[in-house]
Length: 539
Image 1 (cartoon, rainbow, N blue to C red):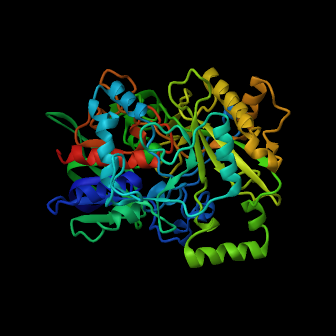
Image 2: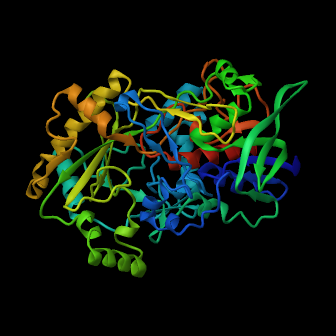
Image 3: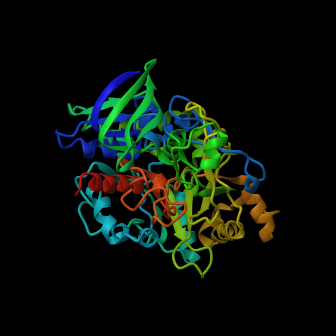
């Protein structure tokens, strides 16, 4: 085994959190930092063109090509489970939507951990610190940070009509979803810079890559963390990994930080003998430290895609199904970095309640001027739009577990979608609300005709079953190394993100969320990494 060297800090995973951590920890030239990434460089052209997510998701060059196990709540279906396989991680292939979640999310984290530093008023400055918002410095937004936030560079008549229809059924118009209460309907802000994807690698890693105290190793797969016993107890002292046909060991003098995401971080902990003892023994892994919560508490947003055929409005379906239309789309992007090629996967959003008993919005809509049978299929050849809705606070809980002691084998991913009565009821109620919006006056001139799920589904049970047929992940897995109090049996890290019972080891990514945020999860992950870096550096 070759020695990669001694480092003050080792960061595992160059996804969103890892890029932030590498930047912040290496700012002090006295800190020697190693960043280990299993994927490759973010030099594939389709990463940077916003519509290129179509060519990056489910592409082995940029995606780990994971799948869930067959899901009972999805009527036996298995889903693709995209995770980024390049520098920038999933920020290189995601929907680019800038979303923080709701104030109540962070108040709940503070209550669950007993640590008030996670409250909204305390994490808001961290969001602002890294932000470079198109509106400039303001009460809720920051300017001059690395994380660029811009307005989208297009609009659609049919989406404007949906926004008007939403207002007619009581969902107000909004021009900013990131002030703590995201209720309303409006166009999403996106992580782009002049019509080009702005991933975490560009934002945080590229400015730091030239620092002599930062070493970046790509194409390197972690085999396990090295845990030693000393007079103070268990301590992580380094990492064993492979890369370039060699076996490596890197020693961490201060801390090792797992930032491999909600799938990768629990996988690496389990391979290292940290997790549920019975499961580890079944997979042939020696138990080093028992933490039953490793890999548990998986939460995700399940989007339920309703699609409607229309007349009298331009949609991407017709534009993209003709040679002239494709040529116009390409020319507009080449000349102005605008138009359909600058599109995030979803352009219009809405946040509302499934029923009056909800204290804050518990539903999120992603509305698109296009339709298709399923992701990866060609667009339909007739005008249509899609209104996807997801339950922001699912009560279903799943898990991630290694299937063997082979570090190269994919873990088993079991989200357990729609397995609670509450989630099935909200799924049915959300489809009813979608129909209510579609029936509002502003959409009637387009003669919307429901294609999915279909008007034959009417009762609550029928709609819940239909949700299982058409629901799919919106790519927000979190929670598998949850933070919590030390008396929480499923807590993996404390409120400072230190792994409970092992010194010198933290987890800092979306896996530490005790509960999922009420919206897209990428920018909350940036905030988590900012907070972790401050804690590590003693600030």
